[in-house]
Structure formats: C-alpha cells, structure tokens
Length: 203
Ligand SMILES: C[S@@+](CC[C@H](N)C(=O)[O-])C[C@H]1O[C@@H](n2cnc3c(N)ncnc32)[C@H](O)[C@@H]1O
Image (tube, rainbow, N blue to C red; front, side):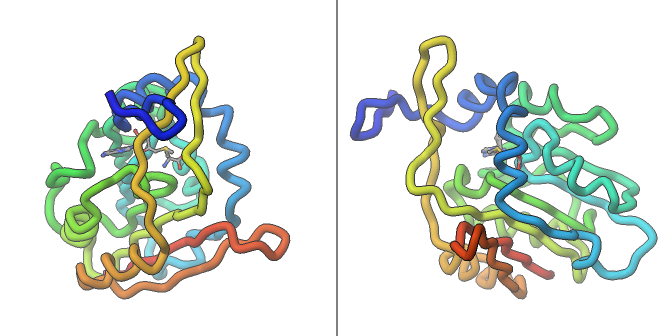
C-alpha cells in the first residue's frame, strides 16, 4: 500500500473508482460548474458523429454531449462499477488508458476526456492512441482543472485518495503536439480566477 505525507492511503484508479461509483453522481454539479462550453459549436458541420468518452465514469459527459447527433457513443473506463451507472444508450467498454486502446484505427470523430488525464501515467501512450483512433480532423477535448491537492474520499470510515499525476497545461499541450495534434487552449475562469483549461486537440 502507498500513503501520502499525511498517512492517507493512495489507491489505484480502478480500485478507487469502483469504490466510489455509488457516490460519484453527488459531485456532478460541482464538476459541471468548472466550465461552460458548447461542444457542438466547436465541431465541423456533419450530420452525425462517432464519439468516444475516455474515462467516461458514470456518464456525466454523456448528458453534456446529448445535443450532438451520434451514430455510436462509446463509454470507455477502467472501472466496471462506474460504467454500470453510465446510461445504457452508450456502448460500454472496460479498458485501461495506460494500454493500447482496444479500438480500430480512425473510428471516431470526437473524443472527450474530462477529469481523467490526471490519473493516467503514460501520457505519450494516451495521445498516440487517441490520435490513432480519431479520423482526420477529429477532435479530442480534454478537461484539465487545477487542484491544489487530491480529493480525499471518506467512505464508511475508509479514508483514501485516488492516485494522480500532476501536470501543467503546457506539459499536456507539449505531449499532444509530440503526437502530431494541433492544440488550442480555452481558459476556464471563475470570477476572473483561472481554474483550468479545456485543451482542444485536432488531428
Ligand atoms: C474523475 S472521474 C471522471 C469521470 C468523467 N469523465 C467525468 O468527467 O465525470 C475519472 C474517471 O477516469 C477513469 N480512469 C482512471 N484511470 C483510468 C485508466 N487508466 N483507464 C481508463 N479509465 C480510467 C476512472 O475510473 C473514472 O471513471
């Protein structure tokens, strides 16, 4: 087991999110408040899209993307318990973003990944796999928000944090560009304070 400097247990994402799957929805409103974005306006004109959510969790993003017409919506996550809560209209795929994504080359127009990249250690793999599965001019939207410290979960008297890897937006942008994406960054502000970024990567 791993502990932080205050002796709080640090658990791996799969174990952590399996454990908090019943409670996660209680944080939707707070997470939604970090940004306001009209995804459809940022997409090319098309009658329908194939969409993948990388680290889909219980479907918070599914509701945000519901005005985008889609052929297929794939919700990928390492936590089976989180996916059990995800709307069943999406295709559920249990997979690890640290590995090769079990998906065909050039099979999606849009990928989103919110509040997830901080849990992924191998960012090079993440971007090269995201690039591989996107079609030409496909877009990857990353929600990256600044946290001074990891969230502490307190469930039935078990206290723990879920493992994270802290990175700046600049580091993420550099990694995306190394994988051949063109990158644009939209700042999220709360009462004038910069609280995070939406990183838009175009293939
Ligand atoms: C903070 S939640 C975000 C969920 C959702 N994207 C949202 O915005 O509400 C992080 C999600 O990433 C998933 N995750 C973390 N590491 C992962 C990995 N290596 N592979 C796949 N999913 C992962 C977790 O299981 C969890 O559902």
